[in-house]
Image 1: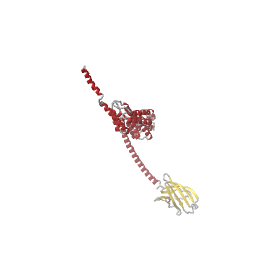
Image 2: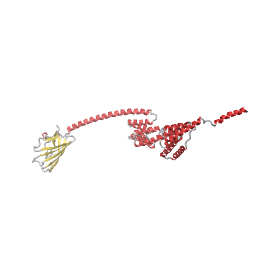
Image 3: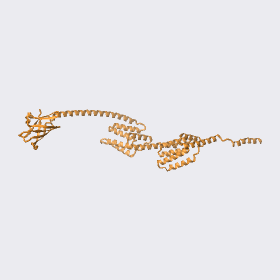
Image 4: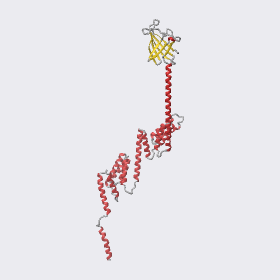
Length: 440
């Protein structure tokens, strides 16, 4: 019995000694980590913008098992942020909630739920950069084994929400200034959204009208161009609508507007995720048609210019001939009337009135006129001539005759009036005068 008792003492003695032994190494390490975490955290509160220190805190916290507790101050801030989030009804309200969640994450940088909640609040406040920044902090802080599907879903929703907002802003800019650059931006954003935006009813109405007009264009002048304008109106309301670009290009091709059709087929190609091979071949065909049409038009313009030049030359030649045929210059004889002021007639060529021009000066000569009579103040204006016949002859009561004659269309007759005045410049007679060209 003594041996077992000794054995009992020999066994129990070390057990008594363990009560006074040093703590296990794991406990010592845990205490050191907590102390280090507390020191890091105190320093971080003074420099919350220090991303390196924040990363060290998160890494240290993730290495600790169990995870360090969330300080009461951080939990209280998180609760206030949640209350703000639940009552928020505007972008500013959600941004205020996000700032509180971010404050909680500063008070405990390993508080991953605070980062995720801040990202959610930012996204609802349309602060997409802030949402992505907080998501990155969440993924850095979340402990191993914790699912991150919610974060991945939130990132996709942020991308989609931002794309929708950018799309609406681009539409507003396009409505104010429908430039090709704005059109391309809208198509790019529509494709980036992954789901084609709904076509507005306004655009559909124009599209249907355009289709009806195109189908009725044969035998209805003007329908083709009206269809083109309706397609354009549809694309003002829905500038991302690929089918409308393709239909518009078809209508423009039928109207011979090849380069306009090419431009709209290129817009159609931009709307496609995979380029349309047939549409690209059609672009090449229209480029060839446009070039041949341009060449033909250039040829026709050159021919028209040549025709016009020839016509101008012929007109000039005709004008020159007519100028020679229908000029006032030449030999003229009068058709006699009783008490005539003029001498000669058809049978007396020697008494013809000879009208000539030299260096811009006009003269009228007559070999049979009385020496005391003179013809002066000659004025020619296009096809009209005026002059004065004056003299002192006792056989006549007049002292001066003012004559105005106009050339007939065939250039063979001068027809007009002659008004006679006495010495007191009182009219004494007025009669018609007719001279005929002497044809040699």
